[in-house]
Image 1 (cartoon, rainbow, N blue to C red):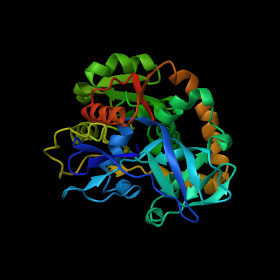
Image 2: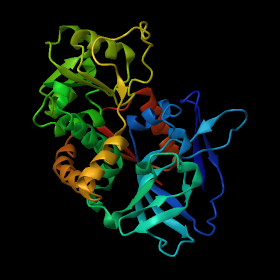
Image 3: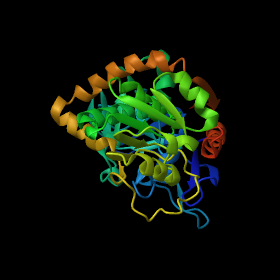
Length: 357
């Protein structure tokens, strides 16, 4: 049966799994069947920043019983089930943004060997990079045997790739060290992996310290309790945790030369009691990957980002396959259970959640 997993935008732990009809494609439209997705703390970040960064706008849904629900964007594979567009064949396998649903109605444009863009009117105010779907046949980084790793890491490692490039493109903002919170997260350690020529420090919990040290991609690992004793450096701070208390502790110790907010893996952290006070160092700013992608596309040409990303992924994939144990769930109930576990922070950093439908 077709289904939607709806998440209460005011209470992310409140979810409803509901049945619904398969959308019918009209002229110029196509219906995708969602096939296989990854679920990580990155998807929690989409929900936490859903209003501020308009992530809820990609896959809108109507209120139910007075509750405003949303469908969280996921990254994964889908298959064209219906098509009223001659250039797009039924059975085409795509990778990109999909909802927490069994199906997605799109309006494909710019169709070519490498993919297409969804021109649905409600998405046109949103970044174009999120409206693109790539054919597996035209994806330079795609390998059939690595589909699960791609579903888990493609969006995260693309963020890591663009973030590492942003830091080096700006000469590390005059700093000599990059400090990353939530060092056990896939986005953080992907970034550290790519910062070959920069000293990196990973901040993590005491419980995750052994895992983070075992990755071997950080020059130093520091627990959150020891931030005040860190050696002083001219540091760039990459905040993947989104924890106001940790951010304040880092700023008070290091007064970073640049402070980038990237995620919210600690979405349930208690509020920072001094949140309104000015922080030492550069003011925290949101890192928005599409801006750097747009810049590099202009500088490197239309295939420059894809080609360089594919080279980086070819280096990273064999390494990361030894860092993560992939667990594959089956069906929408597994997606709902994995959402709750990820939201609660009960998923081991060494576990990768993939769901097949």
